[in-house]
Length: 259
Length: 259
Image 1 (cartoon, rainbow over the protein chains, first blue to last red):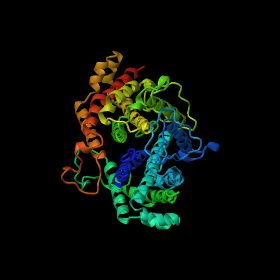
Image 2 (cartoon, each protein chain N blue to C red; image 1 turned 30 degrees about the vertical axis):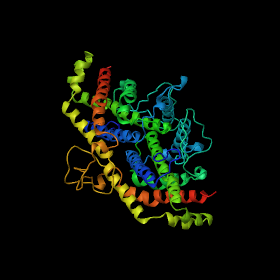
Image 3 (cartoon, rainbow over the protein chains, first blue to last red; image 1 turned 30 degrees about the horizontal axis):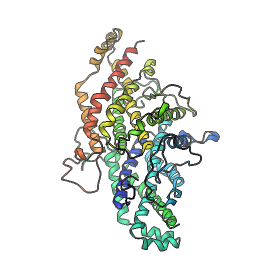
Image 4 (cartoon, chains in turn yellow, blue; image 1 turned 120 degrees about the vertical axis):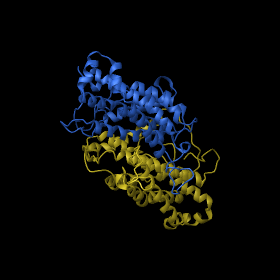
């Protein structure tokens, strides 16, 4: 989190929302990039004891990112946190705007499973073009963008808690996840976000040409079938996984908020 | 190169152009992503004998990509080719559609210098937000996309040579770079590409909202000042650097074509 994160500054809901909206662009871009390549199944099959290429790549990329100073912020969570090396270069501290328990909240196992088991088959074509190394690097970018967006739920929860502690304190003390989930759910917001990511996929995934194509582009955007990633996959991704997992993060964070 | 690259298949100009057009999207996306972060100068300052964080990151990322099986294709060229490890996972061979000398053609030193010295200050805001690790990872994505696009010039040159060997053979034998450069230059194509990348930056870099904003979006696109990367930077990038460097690759390739 950067916006509104100055020392002593209050986290604002507007700043958190801006960050979430910007993360949407990153998610859409990373999926469009991954969709350049077909499924490339050999990248995911276990090569003996060492696991798959995808697992190897993410593990080693996280080691490198940790050496470079990544994973200092509560929304940047590695998928393989075991034995990550310390930074080799000077890092700058980030203002602590969250409860210290924030670092313990992590749903990356669910993000990993969702991405490889559910999402990948929805937006990549069947096939094998041999570009396995490129493929797993693109997967890593998707995973990072999804994980960051979802773990930004910690900021959402903190802002909501600060706005009305009287509403959140009783269910936190009662460890009542369902009551917290209800407090955090706004149906209109969910529908708006789904529509917006779908629109982003339509705009960012079109084939841009210099000609004005009046037949195919009724509203200045491409037909869905011509988009590099089906816009409906984006609204589904947010509906079934990104927003529910973000709420899991929010609930987990709130349950630790008064420790 | 993938399209039209089946074994024994002829490389077609249409397939090469499609690939170049798709690479434009990757370049625009990667620049928009990098523009999320300000300049972050400390990532580029030398930290003693070890060089800068940016250099460390690219070097180590290339080691990892090589282990994963990258850098097998003539357009995928590392910036630090010395002592790269062999792939640790099975790779699939790619059809050899180029002259064997293709692997020797590399302008990455020029790409590196251009990116850090010229381009970066044009599209990143002044400032330091401390996200150095994220910043250099985004730089690496930009460098890779630019380098791949530029080294696709090898395919362009091969197609053009195959189309009219009678035109290219004399200047190749005479080692006449200027004559080759003239043969490879099509002013109308240059202008078209510049316009298209500018349009892509306008479309992909807009802030997408659900509201139809008729005041600011005369033609369905955002005003340039609201774009995440100034569209004019994209046309300048292509005009001053991407297309000239691609032509350098084409000429270098052709000069080796009859060896």
